[in-house]
Image (cartoon, rainbow, N blue to C red; front, side, top):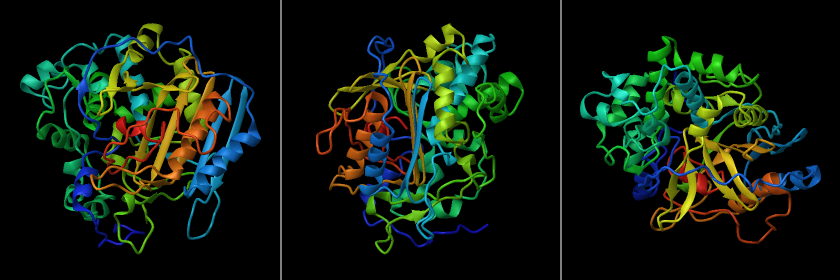
Length: 452
């Protein structure tokens, strides 16, 4: 099938920035930092659980659209109270509006689901977190690497294995989207993704630093296949998705379509695409290029249900949940800790205390899902325009009004509306590394870009 909805001759105008863009898929090129196991963030200070203000949340969500986001849909929970909202358009051509329950490609939020499935197998005694991955996957990770890299290192991104995206979409390093357009309907086997990642130079000795890599989570999928004898996506569907009671969350397999009501997704690539278009539409593509690292489709409501069930102990025994929430520090280029990455989940500070969750992105679509430590207060968001910021001379994204609006929405959802007033600097951590192909802002709109 030929790619649709995008000119195949699209070219990036800044090859240097394009090279930076090509380094990751559902992740960013966060600088390597020293890895050290740390305790989970203090849970005494929880995001405040106040009465939801539907009018204020609606206003803050609408402000995201007014700032330049095409469309967004969100769900906020505080105990039994729930607010669902939508803003903007789902289809630029028709003007079709968004709706709160739209199905959406959630990218690296998938990693939390994969990690839960691995930890369930660990609880059953089939996987040892500190065992060499070569004990389980000797053909995929042979030799010294297989002996030195543990399962835990895959889960917390301290393995030193490179991301496979530069090999999967090689034209991006040349300032062209040709490979993205050409390959978006191809089926890619996990073994090929893993071979691309392992074929790149090792980033650092295993366990000594931190660097986000989708290859890690494709390997974890193959680990599930080995210990269960089943397809890993089926394992996650049965043991995680169905157990959590989710009704609109699924792996699409090789189907390039989203089954339910959904928005079209638009990729701007920081204004580097052909200037005749604001953005290219990337709604349909074969997500085998992400698999257990980032292929899931879900809704904001299902994501809130998943993380509430997880954080309240409904998916893992207490010992495995503690392992999941034991984190490695993630630092910005100035050495400041901006988040803690656990086993498929991370924590970051908000104006009212630490929150837990994950975010993700695909071409044209971004997702954020964050909860208080006990799952009481929750926020999940999907949006359909990515990399809308322009970049500076060094290829770093310049803050955009959408960033500030997303920060205010997130702070209001987790801590109470009005925490960040319009026009005031964000109280959330900020770090603007070079953005990469499938990485839009979420979390603090910028901090998350280190974590995908």
